[in-house]
Image (cartoon, rainbow, N blue to C red):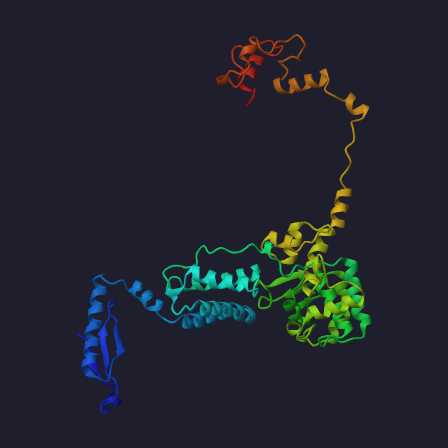
Length: 448
């Protein structure tokens, strides 16, 4: 039986609420806040007891009831909880911010208020309107879909019974490439580095020498901008047999700690550079907040290399990571090796970073040997009676003699392929053979 009461400190206060204490379907004692009106609180107590009894008898499924209640919670509350979940998983602030802002935009534009409102048609309509207005491309369209899909999957099963966006189609990004990148050749990277050194100009608070070192690091490690910005003297082990650089999981895109070998050129540079820095001092200060593409653009234009041409744009990511992967493969690295060095989970992603131009194709084609007719010596080394005898001897053993021109293979030419005996039955004769040994070979060892 439920009990109704006021807290001790509120007994004399007429405006204080009553409380209901009852036993739920699991046998636990629960307390729920009621109303200032005692009769309304008694009605609430009756309802709570009745619901507990129905749950005990299996007439109400507690899980379904809880899901139904949560489906009526405003989506903004779910989104706040989802954001906290992303942060607990140690995702970067940039990722959390972009993901939640995309979800919030869809929710607002589609007019979703509760989880039960979400459906594929409404989400697609919002994204198609953004696509037609030119606000987004195919790639960004897919990012929005991915954000909403991850949000809905997170809500299953406690907040949603199933994912309402399951099976929502993505767009083909090859049909709408908004930011096609191109790789720089090794000589172009060398010219870019030299341009920065000789510029005498400071861009984005980076002087020419620091920009030159940045370009060299990006090209010889393939590290992303945020990963480069995390490097300090503690990131390097130059005393090891194979000197390495470490990218901590918190700064790596795939959230794993990466240990990579260092190029000999970087080892020489770091040997002189690191003693000048404090152990936790970044090599490239505040790089994550700098416009690295602007640095590359100005340093390229200074030496007459177009920042953008028909092959694509040569921004910082292209001049560094794309040129790094392409350079590895052009200089003898295998695809699996390039995949591991680039830290890609899928080799197809590595292929997207590989830029093979017409000149590269021409060089590869030139290595294909021209077809040559066989020489007289090759023709003279054709099939001879001796080679056939050797082959038959290998098959049949010493009991079978060599094949002679007068030997008959099939007695009946119309019975060339009798199905039951794999092409050789009682009509098939032994090849110039004598004795039981050859018969044993014919029956047991032919066409195993």
